[in-house]
Length: 191
Image (cartoon, rainbow, N blue to C red):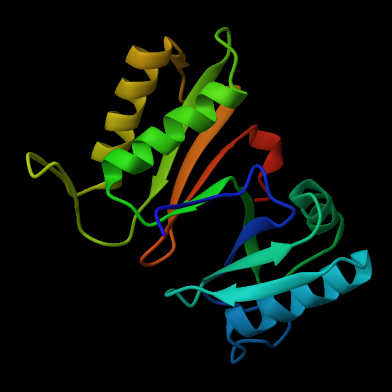
C-alpha cells in the first residue's frame, strides 16, 4: 500500500497518543494505553459513532477508524476530562512509501488546503533512524525531513513558513511501518 488517502472516504482516522506514565488518583500501575483505550471507547460510545481502535507498533499510539468527522470527536475530548489521552490528531493520509513520496503526498494535501496568503509550520515525529532519498541524501532526523518539506513547500508552492504563528500545521507522525500525515489548522489538534 503506497497511500491511503482519507480525504475522499467515508471513514476518518484519528491518531491518539497516550501519556507515558499515569501518577494520578492511585493509578500508577495502570498502563496508559489500557486506560486510554477505555477513555476512547467511553467517549465514542457516548457520541454514538462507529469506531475501531487499531494498535500501532508503539504502545503509546493507536489509530481510531470512525464514521464521523474527527472534529466532533476532538470537540468531545476537549469537553471530557481524560487521564491517559495526551493528543489526538485527525489524519489526512497514511503512507508506507519512501520519503520522496511522502513529501509528494504532503505537497498535494497542502496545495488542496492552504491558500497562498497563509503560513505553515512543519512538525515531524520520527522514531526510527533515517530515511533515504534516492540513495543520495540520508535524512536521519525529523529535523532534516522537516527542512526538506519546508524547502519543497516554499519553493514549489510559494508558501510562507512560520514556526511561531502559523495558519496551518503540516504534521508527520510515524506509526511503525506506516506514516500518518495531517495538514490542519492548530485548533484541529487536541493537546
